[in-house]
Length: 266
Ligand SMILES: [Zn+2]
Image (cartoon, rainbow, N blue to C red; front, side, top):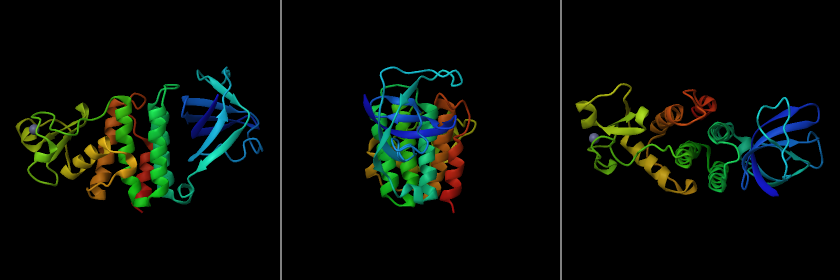
């Protein structure tokens, strides 16, 4: 079977081989063993992050003693299908791509059918390539939100988790609501003052609107209204959400987000 894939992570094995974890359009997240792929004409420069390439996948997979539980797909060549050239020229864009890769690596189970997830990842990479560095922040937020949707653990954003008042009826813009990470909701300020909860972080109403947009609209047609500073706080909300609600995170931070924040604030 021929499949189109994005590389999420790779490392060398022996002198001439490489192991690559990829997200395939038809096969989902799988692991490839690129036989003699180091400096090889049959692979060209295909085994690189942030580009689309195609591989022929054998029907049978193999297992390596030193390589845990994963079944490896032995591939003998690869062909670049599409490059996203602006990404490797920008630290912010590379950092954005690293967060996409880390979250897919950690959150997505192997070999789960994934054409929808593949499309989401491809749209996010395309948006990162086509827009300017400032827009990477909203692309990243939208991607992280949509990935929670795909995983079935999205936060409730449209209305207060206690009284159900919709975000459109919150009294004022600004910090008019409180995030309740543990239950993946926000509460309006009246509910919060009536019944405060531990760890309630103020959250911008504009940002809640943007989160609703991010969940409902295609990644490449978004225009967030909230301030960048509010969006950076929004990343914190999402990171905590992943720590509490996404399997594979187990309360651990998203490591590449630290690098993204550093690059973005430069
Ligand atoms: Zn309320």
